[in-house]
Amino acid sequence: QETIVIVGAGQAGAQVAQSLRAEGHEGPIRLIGEEPHPPYQRPPLSKKYLAGDLGAEALYLRPPAFYTTHNIDLIPDTRVTGIDRAAKRIRLANGDTLDYGRLVLATGTRSRTLDLPGSDLPGVMTLRGMVDVDAIRMRMVAAKTIVIIGAGYIGLEVAAVAQGMGKAVTVVEALDRPMKRVVSPQVSSYFAGLHRARGVTLLLDTGVDAIEGTAEGIDGVLLSSGKTIPSDLILVAVGAQPNDELAAEAGLETDNGILVDGAGQTSDECIFAAGDCSRFFSARYGRSVRMESVQNAIDQAKAVATALCGGEVDYDPLPWFWSDQYDIKLQIAGLSDEYDNTVVVGSPEDHKFYVAYLKNGQLIAVDSINSPRSHMMARRVIGEAWREDLLPGA
Ligand code: FAD
Image (tube, rainbow, N blue to C red; front, top):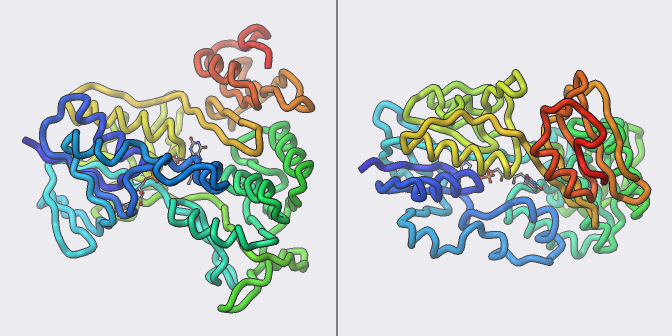
């Protein structure tokens, strides 16, 4: 019976293991992760978990007993350091080796960091895992002033939580509007207004030149304008980069992500990849994409499990995503970046609207703000020609 080894015990890795069992794989499954916790969901990390509204166990994807019951050998606290493709064997940080029949890489991403004077001072943090949030939260409770570098989802979600905890929050963004890479000017403008109305200082078009402080602690952030903003805690939230080095060092094809086909297979037929670390060609979008979302981690992992069990799959999903900031839920369906026109339905003033993105008259994506019905419907009708009654009112 074939042994399937999964590297990375996160959202995608856990899903591969679970789906392999559901699809009838009877051989050994080893799920290896470098984090101390059993597989958990990350979205609450920058939302309810940071706010202290959820405990660690509430984030676990499955209770720890699930893995024993399903005969999944969960190996935490263990980093995989190398792949010997000829011997079909992986190397662990403690020097041990493990043999595989087929291997799945589900190594996710890590936070990008800034290469600036002072960026390695204590008090400059990034947010990817539970351990990060535990450290951030400890400092945040004591902090009076917080600077967040980067107005993407994670930066803005943390800003909302910190503001709710009564902190003086400044968000510094190099681009001219928040979440610029993923949403339209209308949606950016709504979220900029929302954060400012709640008391967050949002500085756009603003670079950071240095972090000021000593080994004892940070003092503040020196902006490109020459001004320094005092800060007790600095969160660097400037995006993520794929953990694809293990694959690259083993000679697999990578390009800002591990390259896979519609079955999740890499350039080695015995090695698959799924989740944030992988990049695939999407016929739907006519280009290669690397996604960072729960939807992608789960659905691609399911496709990989099906392929490993001998099924036919051609993974090319309609992507969807969400972000919670204060009491506002942003839900995104489709990729909007190639739009040539937008239609706004509902009222930003009432915090309930959606933006439909069109390309050549066709609906390609929808951003819904406190409008879950339009989001659910959008996931069904994206691709159709736009008409006013295609989606429900906001
Ligand atoms: P991960 O869940 O990151 O798992 C990868 C695992 O592999 C990690 O545990 C890592 O430690 C381990 N690993 C890496 N290298 C090795 C190695 N060499 N040896 C052993 N283990 C290794 N998505 C949404 O759709 N909605 C949201 O609201 C949302 N919010 C988010 C908020 C935060 C703060 C973060 C960080 C992410 C959020 N995401 C959200 C994204 C979503 O969580 C990810 O897309 C998803 O977790 C990807 O799953 P994955 O299994 O590919 O990677």
